[in-house]
Image 1: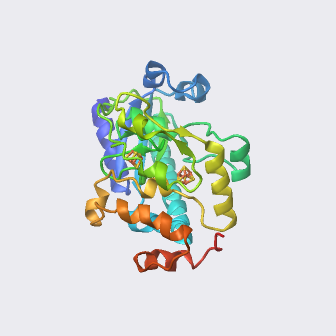
Image 2 (image 1 turned 45 degrees about the horizontal axis):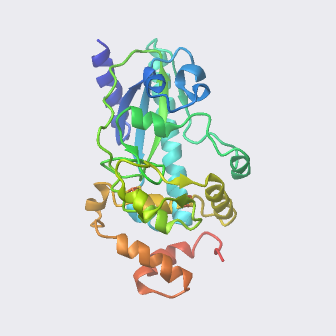
Image 3 (image 1 turned 90 degrees about the vertical axis):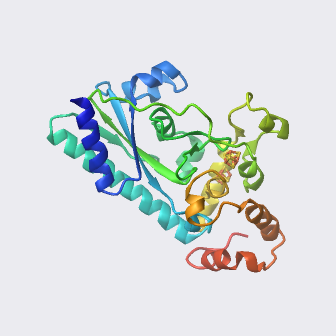
Length: 282
Ligand code: SF4
Ligand code: SF4
């Protein structure tokens, strides 16, 4: 019975444009114990039994232009569509008599507020991981097989006990360190030895404040968010679609090229897009 309803939910969301849909049991938050109690679905809405996690892809060629107004618009559009999907599903379930609520995908008022308190009331990243959509990479994002970290998530809490999906067992992060190397804010700290140690640190130390300050600068320049650690990650089938499986050298050299203010033809199209619709970043 609940399996049939789960299939209907998945179909409903795919028919409306979702790329990824999986279910996590609310019990998983307590079982894994990584998320503080106040941030768990059972605390945020005590009636919740399952979390339906919805993912939408961010097409790579636009992500590659970051920081740009085009990337900002993609990010906003993706967020808006995700919220629409989650809201539509919530109403559809409520009308069927299954109490449900959704958490919008960002949930903060401004970058200044984020700098003061760099945390969301609810982290969709954990929901995505517990629903088996992917797992965390060195860069603190959820990597998926389909889109690497170039996917955004939203979550719907429901009081239905839906059959949960299995979490992924193997890590998708190949620990290449490109995200660490290319971050313009040097927000990640992890040594080469730590990267090589597969059984050691899962994620780099992350300076949230440095990242939030970079976001503030990009917001002022009208080309928020940064997302370079999302752009450069080699994981994801989406790279095949765009013939970009071997782009790491291109990304690494871009950092050098930009720091020397060279006019490198390899980056002409990105620079063209960046030079329209947002203010220059000195
Ligand atoms: S979003 Fe940008 S500044 Fe923040 S961690 Fe990623 S690469 Fe660094
Ligand atoms: S860029 Fe490399 S190290 Fe960073 S998250 Fe992706 S696979 Fe992992």
